[in-house]
Image (cartoon, rainbow over the protein chains, first blue to last red):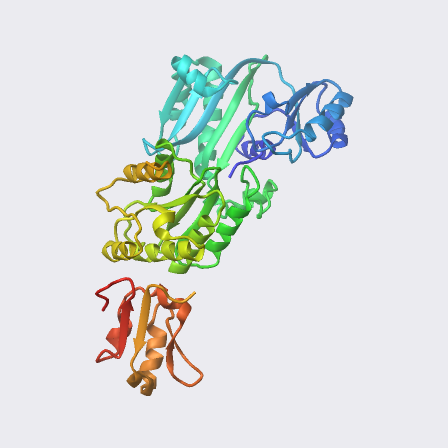
Length: 401
Length: 77
């Protein structure tokens, strides 16, 4: 769940991270008033959940309330990556002498949080990592133990920062790490952190992402910064396909068959099991396939639930075939899912043998499931075929190989 | 849509044992059985394919009073 910049800055304030003065407004008249209350030079920032605001013209500068009003009007009507802003942030403009980058996220391979710090902020951090690796540090820490400021100091010092800057930046990074851990964030990024002419250091822009499942835990904070309960914070409004899949999942409490995200490909995916859905989605793409959707199925859904999801996916005009693939399952039963997908295909008016490109769910009750698939002529594989190989086969079948 | 995968046969003797009928209704984890207006044990067509093959109904009855048939098996039991 991503925060708008103005919300993220409210959160940073609670963690004593220094910020420029700013006011969030929703119309150009309020922007005029905000500019009068701030300073002569201000930055006008579009509040959209999208990157590339500067390039798109969503960030501009002004040095009088009249100019702020005029430019705010333009920015408020400016669509960025298909999104209109929910408002604008009017922020005092600061003279910056040096920019830094700090982010905390999870390193999936190390299975630990990691601090990424650079003394080359304000630009694309991947570019810094490629062109100037000596200006970027990666410092892992434990999510299970209290965070030590010494770790933050190491992260900052690793790129050669010393003296007063080291102390100030370490304090910011320490607070950012505490925020990350305490608020169940998946990303806490400040880019840039700016050093001002007087030597003080402030956060100029930030990006916070909270684990969606943690919303209830942090409902008080969300209410305080004005995030409505019904605001799902997706980067775009849900499509009808996604809404229908959510309804399928919500209609039956048994297991999971939903969490669907629509894509523009032609291979429908019914995937899941212990991280299997992400792996399989990537495997399909790596094999050159074009998924029509991402989804999650598992936790032993009922036959009806699996059938309804399958029927929904098969019914999309863009879906030529579906691939039913999971990691090795234990509590989800192969035969129950097999019944569901076969039934869903038939109810949608398709021959399962034609519509299902591949069925790869090994595990609990697989013998029963495979007997059923054989009966309906569905191409299936067992655990001797890896998830990547199964994805490859599905893509080949789509291409008629 | 009629059940595609599972068929359940109930022997006539079951209907005479109201206690068994009630037990079968309450023990089935996917609500396959119900008591009809005529106090007969019947199957709920839309739930038949949800049968988890737990065999609780078979164990609760005796002498093949309840038979589960897997319609996808040529050697169905």
